Image 1: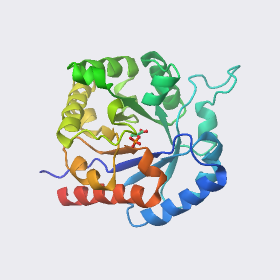
Image 2 (image 1 turned 90 degrees about the vertical axis):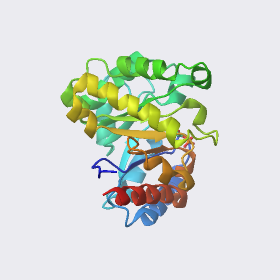
Image 3 (image 1 turned 180 degrees about the vertical axis):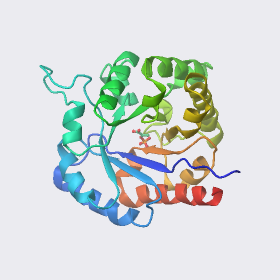
Length: 262
Ligand code: PEP
């Protein structure tokens, strides 16, 4: 396969885990375990309360931090919410938008995903926009239809220049936290489709540079074969990111596949 420039990009979504001392310990372990894997872009997504702590722990390592959600307004009377400027102030470079758990449990819609992505970009944050079908949609042959709907509404009105700063994550909902992983072929089919859609909307150059992550029960044992697929540029990792060794193993296997292609 011809060498590619994209990736590996490995993101760890810690979800609602870790007090500040626990987060510091995990971040320190991640820094040690990931040393030597600096060709990869690594971003950790702790809870809001641990952002500053994790930011200090990773300082100077090249590892970045991001938040798991944001509000679409920069400030105002929105009790309990956190804005993009606040995340920048806390040291974030990235933010997850439209994670399936936000969609499933907290009423996230494609419209709010779009507003949040635009808010992130306004503040210079890289949004990682998550899309993915539920099991019933896959089983009834509606995967691509669902992805298309999420992409067109979630990315609505984003200019080609803005898309440069957007990362996409394909996360089949049936594979998240379930131990079931999409096969490399199943994942690649959707990733290739997403890249084609980006090409139609933003042109070939923008599409060929776009980072498209896969998420759904990624482990050290499957990251090599997934990354070998042409359109899989890295991973959004949930459960396995809570173990520094596993997380580093995923990054190392992706990097091994990447180096073979260069
Ligand atoms: C996720 O939360 O984005 C995720 C992919 O979780 P897991 O790796 O645990 O399936």
